[in-house]
Image (cartoon, rainbow, N blue to C red; front, side):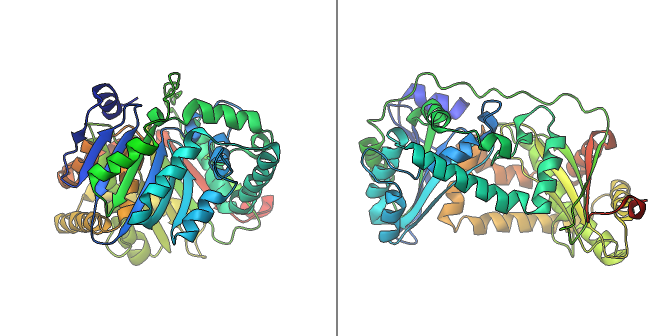
Length: 445
């Protein structure tokens, strides 16, 4: 468990986070509680985040974290299957859940005076989930159909799944969250209950309540509903195998007759945001914005879309919130009269020019201002704020890290960004992928 969790667990006391409107508590059973107070509307978002995701699955059981997420909407000893969502709907609210590699989260958005009911139902399914063999068979088929619709029938999704597997040879981030089909079909009731009992416990969970609430009243409700739940004493440590050094470029092509728009991707392993040390991630975040943010003002947008017109769309991406190494990547979509080989060469040339030319100071100042404005606007959405803290805390960061992040970003200099670019753009450490329509051997030569 990471530092914030340990401090709260062993102290057993109430603490206040650095931001005035973020209150941090802990229950005696080790459950963390965050309250984000916002009285602008009589609405509340109630979320429970578990420190477990697809990257924590046992080998051969891919998809079990996501499968269990589905089964959590079945019954308990007090609720019928589907009753939780039905009650939320009857009370004018919405609910859902989502799974990533590092976390699984459940939420409801309702009127503030329904918070007590939400806690009662969510606490019930944390420890008293019930599922029949029929429930498992039905939901397994639902997951398989979901995979068919979102992955197997979408060539872009299949390509990205294969590309990610090439990026991560040893780390479980290379395994799809939904799971490999041949392993999903073998998941059973015993697998689901074993995963549930191993990871779903108050001392492996974070309760986040955001909206029109009083922090002390939230704490009282949390103690009432979640406080009686017994902690688990044998939650395994989050150990993941790491990637070996990459010594040569990896290249892949993916052909499918359903592809209507070919494109090129290039990605690199990149450091994640680390607690107390977010500077490297901040530089990569700024680099992605400089290279591929707004099409009209970003470096790659200007060079490839507007000046040379060798791309109809180009972007750079990076997301530093993860337990282990993340990815920094580039995507370019060529116009119909350019081959993928020509598109890749144009992208390489644009990057090479950028490394020589550097960053325009005025443009860099505008990008910083835009990023800060987006962060301020994001604070208007109580759900987005809750999600920001939930993703961070389940990925090894702390409340203090989240609160410091805007200032860490603003402290990045042009020289920092250029050094990050020189460090990341190493062709030997790249994974380059082409996705294209199905071609005959003669057409591809």
